[in-house]
Length: 177
Image 1 (cartoon, rainbow, N blue to C red):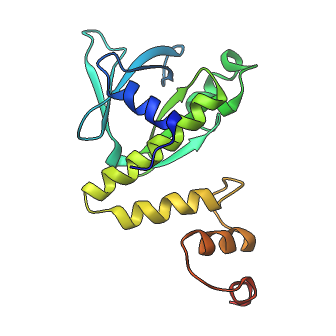
Image 2 (image 1 turned 90 degrees about the horizontal axis):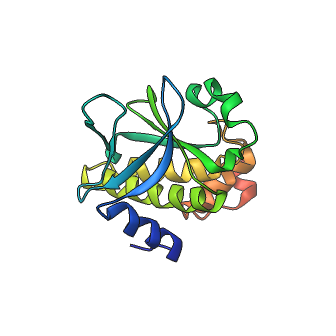
């Protein structure tokens, strides 16, 4: 894989037995620190807050998108608690056809950026293993082209997308269509 040094560090930590400590925002209660591990079959495993210390598992194949910032209901619900923290430290894994989210916060913007980048690559790998590489590839590049994160592309973002996926068209031709 083509991983940056920071991504390699995160990958090593995620695959270790102790995992990575992240602040998890749930549907109820206050945010809790949880240890997240990555399994060989690309599943995120963490202890739930439920009694009995059961494990929660999120297969990265199920992730539809990664949203940066405080954009989900869980983050909005905790607005007073997280007031003063940078939204760049936070992200959400959106899964199960956009019906669920795993809302997480890192200690710094740099950590969040590296972890998001790594997770995007791992999601693509997971989908490739399950025969959905092409869809994951285009979703990944769509998200990169969608600069304002509104889920749609304006003409300049379309130009960026076409060039990003290596289709050789002149900007004027794209805008003309």
